[in-house]
Length: 271
Length: 257
Image 1 (cartoon, rainbow over the protein chains, first blue to last red):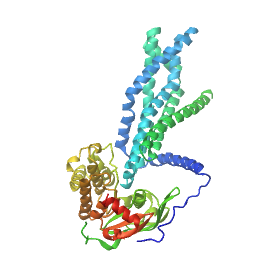
Image 2: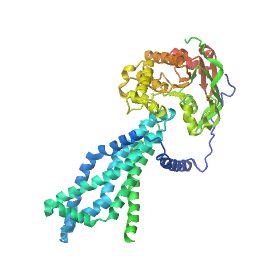
Image 3: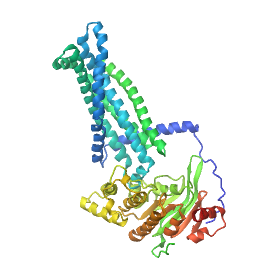
Image 4: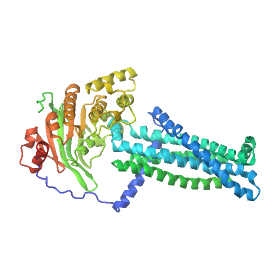
C-alpha cells in the first residue's frame, strides 16, 4: 500500500468562528448547558440505577456525618460565645436563642453544610470521575453499551440533591444543640425555654427557604463535581485539577446562590 | 509466526473504512484511511505512538466521530446511527483497552457482571455466575473472581479486561496495545490468548500495537500506519520487505536494539 501522498504536510484544517479562545469559551458554555440539561432528560427515564443511587447516598450522607457533627457543634458554641458580648452590652442576652436560631436556620446551617460537602463530597466526585476518565473506565462503559452518564452522573447528582438537605437539617440541629449548651452554661436557660425561643424566632418561610437552598446547593455540588470529573483532561494532573476546581467552582456558585436566594426570600418576606 | 488461518472468509467484510479523516485542532492524524476487516481475520495495525492507531478503533466503536469518510461495521455506518442503534451495534463489538479500564471500585466478578446485568435482564444470578466462570476459565483466571483490580498484576488485568469484553459474545474484538507494559513472557501469554479467543469465539479482530513480536504472533494480515495513512499491508514478511527507511527503522528498533 505504498502511497504517493505520504509526504503530505499537516496543514491547519480548522477555521475559528471568532478566535480560538472565544470559540473554546462558547463551546464550554454549550457543554455545561448540554451536561446539565441531560440530567433532567435522563433522571426520569428508565433504567434506574437504584443500587448505585443508594450507594452514593450512603457515601454522601452517612460518611459525612462525623465531620458535619463536629463542625456544626463547634460552630454553635463559637457563634453563641462570640454573640454574647454584643448582646450583653444592651442587657439583651436573653435574646441569644432567637439570634442563634435566625442565624443558623436561615444562613449558617445550609451554608456550612454546603461548604463542608463541597470540600468533602465535591472533590471526591471530581477526583473519582476524573480518574475514571483518565483510565478510560468511562469509555469502557460507553463501548459496553452502558450509559455512563446515567450510572455515574445521575446517581451522584441525585444523591447530593437528596442528602445535602438531610445533612442541613442535621447540621442545624447539632449547631443549635451546641448553642444551647453554651447558653445553658452561662445563662442557666432550660432546654425547653431555649427551643421555645428558637422556634418563636423563625417562621415557616425560613424553614422552606433553608430546604430550597440546600436542595439547590446539593444539586450544584453534585453537578459541578461530575462535570469537572467527566470532562477532565488526560493525565494525573487532570485528576488533581478536576478535584480542585470542583471545590472552588462549587463554593463560588454556592455563595452566588446564597446571595440570590436571600434577595428572593427577603422580597417574599416583605410582601 | 502465526499459521495461515483457513477460517477467514474473504467474501465477508465485517468492517469497511473508506477515506477516513480525523484531526485534532490543527493536527490531522488520519488522512483518508481505507481499511477492510474480513470475517474471522486478525488484522494488526502497526505504527508509532501518536500516529492515530487508537483513534482509528475509537472511531470504529463510536467513541470518536470521523471528520470525513465512511466507517461501516457489520453493515451499518457508525456515524449515522441513533444512540440506540449504536448501543445495539456496540454489543457486537468488544473493546480491550490499553490499561484494561477495569472498574476500580468493583471486584472482578462485579466487573464481569456489569454488562450482563444491563443487557441480559432476564438472566438469573446463577446463569450469570456460570457465564462468568466460563469466560474466566477461558482467560485462565478463575481464581481471581473475588479480587479487586488493584490486587491483580498487569497481565491479569489485561486478561480480565479481555474477559469482560468476551462476556457479551462479541463478533468483533478491538485490542488497543494488548502487550504494552508487559514482560515478554506475559506478552506471549496475551498473544496466545488473542489467538485462542479468535479460534474459540470465532471473532474478527483489529489489534493495535507497536510490538512486532505481538504482530508476528497474532496477525493474519498486517497494515502499517505512517503519516496518517496505511503505507504497507500484507503478511509480516511482505510489510517489512521494503527499502522505506521509516519501516526499516521500526523493524530494527524492535528486533535489533
